[in-house]
Length: 444
Image (cartoon, rainbow, N blue to C red; front, side):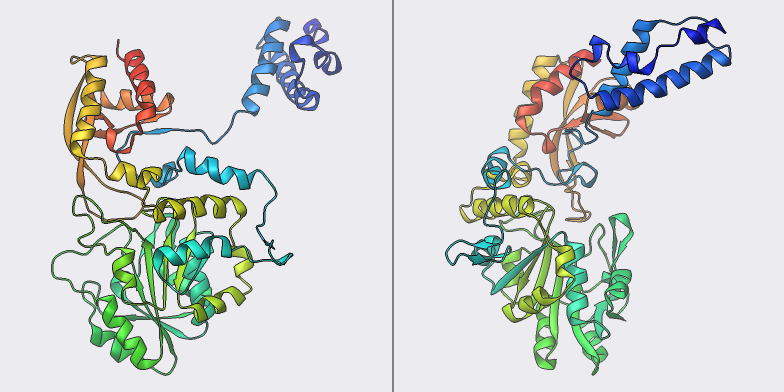
């Protein structure tokens, strides 16, 4: 066991020049752990000699691994633009650059510069949003789930909110409308059947304890065939007749007309807002193409009541969210959709995608890949079951092995019909060179 005496002392190890410029506290912690492991291995007769250089290199490697970022940029080559597992909407560098001027400095987040007193953080986006949506007032919280919870808690606590059975959805992360309603204090009153809910169902369910008629976007699924739902306009009319609040949880909201006839069964914000809803809410990071946020719009008197709810302080957004959201809204007002990557990707024509894919194929070689036409979906619970055209590069080889190799290089493709595909629908042009290099290194 003489080898035990040769184990380096921790206090001397940390002073080695190889660790120059590194945090000595972290180095000491890692060194102690490594020496303890070596001691145990010696006692177990697993090693019989020591290599000091190897010990130093192992400690330094562990130190470097400790500070590697857990969050890493990926290239989304799945074709799913709003990929929930990869962060949904992209933020353009130009918009982030403008927002960073506020994010990296002190700002007038809650300071009224004109009056020299405390201001309101929501006013920085409310003016732009009111102009964009043509509504009385808006409020922004940290996501649409929060918006749903806040609205129900404010207006339906201990009172009934009437919802169609076909709209009692569950979305990602086991977020279920019935359970959210229960936690908010609202009393759920289900009406209709799973596949059919008529205006009369709402009308017959209204009682003295009814506070709200709520319509919920069918996120992640759709009901086809023998089915019927009640148009929001009819729900709105019933609310006006009975002095109730009408609320539409859109889940996702979009502004410009969608390509590929995707908007046929998914009304735009412009269409819905023509009916002057009391309240609507939608996500900022889905079809709207900005940061994670819950955007509430509607009547000022109702928004004012939401602002007085003590829960709002727990659900409010910070300066980073507000700054990026403001820049996105300004891009909408300018109709500068190129600055909103989600829309830019969605609006790319088949011809444009085909040209990009063909150009990459020529660089790589026809024998190693081929261009194919296929279909994709939007993702993020939006436009459920609505496929639209895309162009992909089929990389030759065993699909599962290629998927693993590309994933190790931070490129996430997809497997379709036992083919590994690089789908251009979700790829920004600036990442094409990196994809080419990876394909060349992978297929030799």
